[in-house]
Structures are given as C-alpha cells and as structure tokens.
Image 1 (cartoon, rainbow, N blue to C red):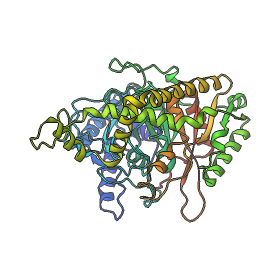
Image 2: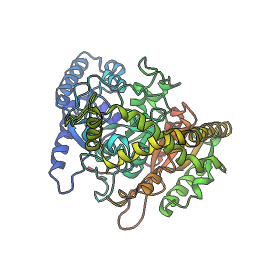
Image 3: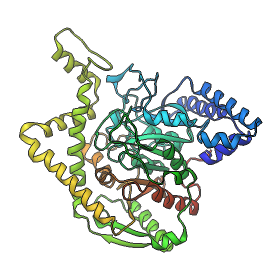
Image 4: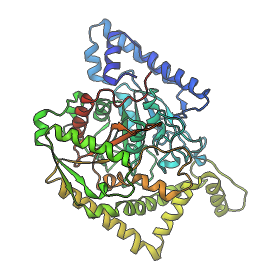
Length: 500
C-alpha cells in the first residue's frame, strides 16, 4: 500500500483516481470475506464511498485542467483519500454499534467532529471497523461480530480495542485509520500488527460524536503506515471544538503538514528516560526485550543520551487505571437501558425488568464484568477507599511524569509486554488480558502523547511484530512524530508489514 504522500502525488498527476483507491479497498474487502480465515477488519463498507470518490475525482480533474492542482490540495490536503473508521465514531446516516448487540440498528444522527474535519479536508470515510465491544478489550475478541484476525498471521489476535482499524491499515485495505484509546487501544494493536499508532495528548482531538467509555481517559487516535501518514490527518483534525470543553489547540501543528525527520543535531541534544519498572517487569517477554535493546542502541548511535530512571508510582498505574476506567464505564453505559438507545427487550413486566432484560441480552460478558466492577467500586462503602485512592494515584502519576519531563525529552519503553498471542489464548483469563496494558496506561493517566513504532519482530517459526513507544510531554506530538520519522527513514517500510 502506498503512503498518503505517494497517493496524493498519484492523484495530482492522474496516475490513479480516488475511485480506484476506494474500489480497490472494496474489492479486497469482498474477496477477504470469502477466504478461509477472514480478516474481519471492516464490518461494512459505507454505501456512498464510491460516489464521494467520483466527486473528488471531478474536483481534481477540474483543478488539473485549470492549473490549480497544488492550490486545491493546499485547501484539501486529504482530497480523495479513503480512511477506515472505528465503530464507535459517529458518521451521519451510518450504523454505529460499538460492536455490541445493544446498539443493533442504531444510526448516527450527526458526524463526530473528527469526521467533519477529515471530510472538510477531502478525506472519504470508507467503512466502519470491528472493535472490542464498547472499546473494552485488548484483542478485538470481545465483539458481537466475531474477532478480527492479525493480517501478519491470521491465527493470532490483531490487538484491541481498535483491532479492526489497525488490521485494515496493516492489510493495505485503507491508507490510514481512526481508532480510540482509553488505556492503549491504538498503540497496542499497532504494535501487534506492525504499523504506527498515535495516542495524542488528551484534548488535542475532540471527543464530540465518539461513544464514551472512560471520559477522563478517552482519546481518538490515528493509525498509519508511516509517521507522515499520521501527522497530516492529525494536523487536520486537531484543535479546540465548541462541542467539547476538554478540547485544546496543538501548538506547532502547522509543522505536521510537512513533517521532517529529527536531525542529527537534534539527536545530539535528545535526553531519553527509560523507566526501570518496565525493564524489570516479570511480564516482559525476552523477545520484546531484545527488540527494545536494539531500539535503544539505535538512539545511542544517533548521539542521544539515555538514562534508566526510577518512577515507583508506575507500579500502581494499572490498578489506578482500571479503578478509574471501570467506574467511568459503569456511569457512561447506564444510558444504554432499552429506552433511549438501540435494542429493547420488553416483556411488559415494568421498566425495571425491561432494563434488566435489555442489558442482560445486549451486553457481552466483558462489558458486564466491567460494569459490575465499576459499580462495586463506586458503591458507598468502597468509593472512599478505592475510587478516591485511584484518583490520588493518578494525580501522583501526572505530577511525577511532568517532573520527569523537566529533565528529559522522551520516555522510551516497549508498547506491550508481549507480542501478539493466538486467538482464544487469553479470552477466558481477564486478568492476563488486562495486563496487556501494563506499559500503556500511564500515558493515558498522565494525558501525554505516545506513538507505537514498529521496531522489529520476534524470532522463530511464527515471527510477529514488536512495537516500541516514544512518549513525550503534553502537546509534543510534532517532536515524537519527527523522531519516529527519523526511525522510518532509517528503516524504510517498517510500518507496512503486509506486502501486496
């Protein structure tokens, strides 16, 4: 699959058309459905994608004839480019189910802000992608549509919860994709599938029109074949939104439109921190550790200064995260009651029974588990000891991480303790599944940006990708993307694991 930069040049020159880009994706999707082990990345393709592509082609042809093609792409930098959309981000007039039975038949009445901004830049929503139900999971096995497979090896998971969007990009079914993150749901599948995945600073991308899981943690993320494939959509979507009071501007966002790799001079001044808590983790797979050491050596060869630092509070990050996230999930999902949204099971036994019957049939086991735990944490006798303590730990993580960035430019660590695992291996072991987020959740708690970079593969008969994350201080997206671009230029094609 070509990069966004290559696709734009091909569109400008007439070597390809938007309709061809869209049709190629549709054809691949249709062919894949008939395969022995379907990828199951897209749930459906949007029925107006081809007509939007035709309109884009007419606009491009007209501008080319008038000698205004560069001017057109200045105004609409993503014109004619199709992208994959996660099934919890609203597209007006399209189904939105969060891969849950309880929202079966629900149609979004408006566009999410990120969709509006992408479409204003000319991008075309291609279809909605599979995910863990209500974004609760790390493998995209908790979906009413069945699991999404890893395009590198279809016996393995794609990661979650944004596994559908990630697999679609990794399998060359889309130029780039949108996912969402609460505790690692963009970076984790990006690591498992061998592509780039960015979790921006909290607030940089509006959450308006995105179905909530944990509101103080949720953030839209971007998946791509290269850092540039992430930088350009980010520049288009970022910024304050009237409809989201938590939204924020991204300083230096203009630099993302023409992303440059970090220079040799910049690397000589770069100071990197490696938390020893992650290096000493008992759950760290030796193969992942080996790729991490190779990545560390690359930074050292560039002249960066690296220190192993002690951040004891990180040992409490996963406990704090799950207390907060599950409490917010229990609150947010209370609206799905059989009355206001989606499916309804009404046996005429009163509202209480309608509520119980609808939620019992509509929610899957993982969502029920998290709602029950969240309500338990929020109960009167436990909220003081548990929820308030979780929030206190979160505040400490934010303070300690902010203090660290006074001395360092980057935090370097593996994205996940392990590479992708086989389908069904952890689905019945919730605790083991939750520990997949061991290295990612501190980023969401601290509200900083982080990108998972494809840095290598495991060895053996079934090699799988390994991602390493580059995390920076708040609003440092231009810097961490620039550093990732330097990696990409030294390791060309590392973010395009599936060859056509």
